[in-house]
Image 1 (cartoon, helix red, strand yellow):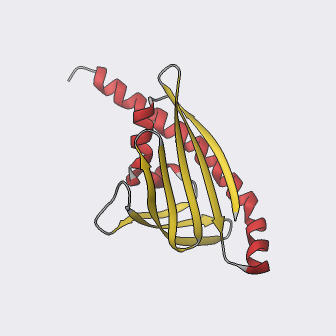
Image 2 (cartoon, helix red, strand yellow):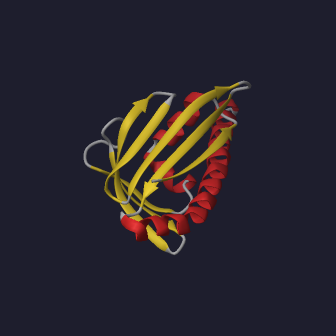
Image 3 (cartoon, one colour):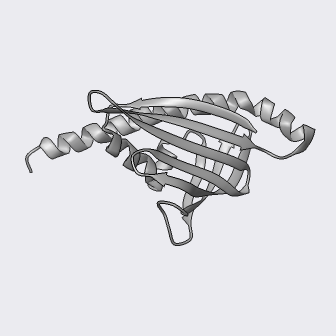
Length: 158
């Protein structure tokens, strides 16, 4: 299994950052290359929630169904694939001074077994790394912007 890690720092409190990343409706906004992300079944949040996803990596599109396997409010979100491309994704949250927060994201993936699968993983790693970097920048930018807008709206007279 190949693994990519990245960290995003957000100008937003921990609870806001967690809530933003826990809301499936935001995934297409921040996840670089993600073209489909929608709930499958009754739950759309929390432990056991499942999502159908598709992500463009280089010239290929990888599809999978993922399930939330760990949900710890303001601390951790973890997903694992139940069909399609084998993957794990962990979001680890940390509060920072100055009303800021940090998210460490760990992505593990296996395309398919055998020598050909491992070779393709190695070929795609630069694309995955570039996507991860763009995703980290998007998380920082969008979480910070949404929080700033919420704070401005809360402070403006109606």
